[in-house]
Image (cartoon, rainbow, N blue to C red; front, side, top):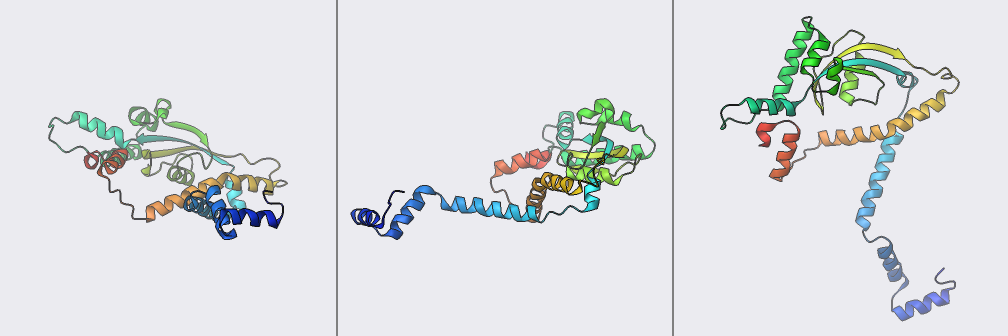
Length: 244
């Protein structure tokens, strides 16, 4: 558009005293000032698309996606356990408490009480750090994709009335009791199965990418050099002793 014929372009380059290749490079720099950042962004987009395109939804996966479960749980929060233990410490020189270890130990103790016949709802009301404690730990009905992966994997393996072992998620330690299971398969499922399959695939694409990234993080040897940032991470994980 700027040079409708070759002569004008040649005149322009002569006045600028540059070659066509140099002019193209200048235009490229103006349009994309940070090529490395652009290249990284495009590489991530391509990788994400590759991961998402590998996602497959079997007939069983599709049917399972219409299964809902109802569950109650008891959540023990490592941060709150560490805070409570620190308040109870009488020796100011004592090492800060390890919230993660305390939370795990308390969850295992409560699980033993449940297995011995303890009232799950009562124990949830008295011990759970989740707002659902007021309802005896009842979380209501939910499908896959609505809870933390570790939590839902454990919940969907249970049958109504069964209680899980202690399950750890980013929120802390859980004891899960399944109270119901039902199917919500649409009436037109057989007729429009491919439509429903594509809908589920679209829903799960982001999760597939997130799980891929989480897997990379777990497999990688990530070291936080800055001591302040390292302390924040440890405190966030409920490891008060190491964080302080």
